[in-house]
Length: 394
Figure 1 (cartoon, rainbow, N blue to C red):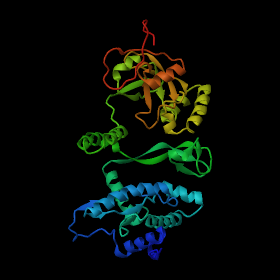
Figure 2: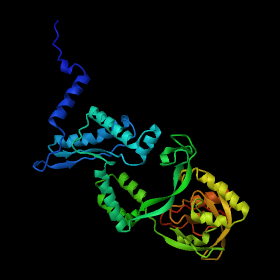
Figure 3: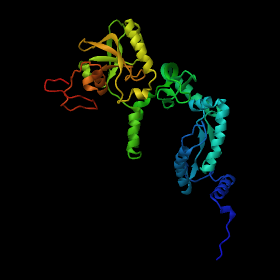
Figure 4: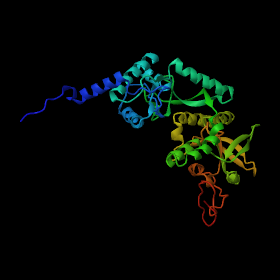
């Protein structure tokens, strides 16, 4: 019995891979056609990877999906633009360089070179003549240009805001870099620190973005559209001014249900906000001491954890009172971590009978609950309510 001779060129997967990678490079198979190319055009763009290390299987999975799309349209006779780039300007690259004890630029561009080799070994059909590095001046000059245009139109502004801060590494950390209250890199305890930062007034476009999502109905998956609506968010309500005893300027709170004002039984401010610090500064010494101890604990907690509905409610009474504008009742003012300084006005009127978070807090600290909305009547919008017994007691 005889066997056919084996072509050494196809004797192993590695040989086959090397052959076609060489062919693609020499023949510029994935090069995008120029202006003279009359084929219909398609643009495929995947997110740029962070060059904070080498590629891993997560990259292989992510770029496989976009490559399938690019190859599909290419085989359908389209002129496909499928570029690649690196998100190499910012916190991830900086933190990676700190972790390695390397110069950020050298470390970043070494990783880019390594990742390029990895992508070519994957066989991803990028047009390697179209490569972007967001850390190149030729790229970020346009970021600067866009920023200046937004600044000129009043859409960019500065303000102080709390960030995750590692006192050991002297750097800001993203929420996912804080693990059990500590820096994932050095293990040092993370605190909240107020730093001056730049912000964009994206809320100026919130209504337009939400309304224009309706045009995508039937074209985008409903789940994706709903996630976008939830992320942008839209609250319809009213600003309400509360006077605080011993303070000249009123404090404004936003409420989606101003009709429940008569049910407010206490007032809550963000412990890391300026208002809480001001009120505590004028309080009795023991109140200031309790507040500072509480603030120190809050500063170790991420905003994500603070918004969790599963956490037990915590807070401290500030020894001050707000005046309900509709009935003149005195409302005790508490600092509690479920209110965020950067959300709304950093203060809320607490209506525990008709808001679940307020109710949980009221039960934790034995505060009064006053029902002012008929829970048997139809309610427009999502407003948690509690049931009452025959005597009207919640």
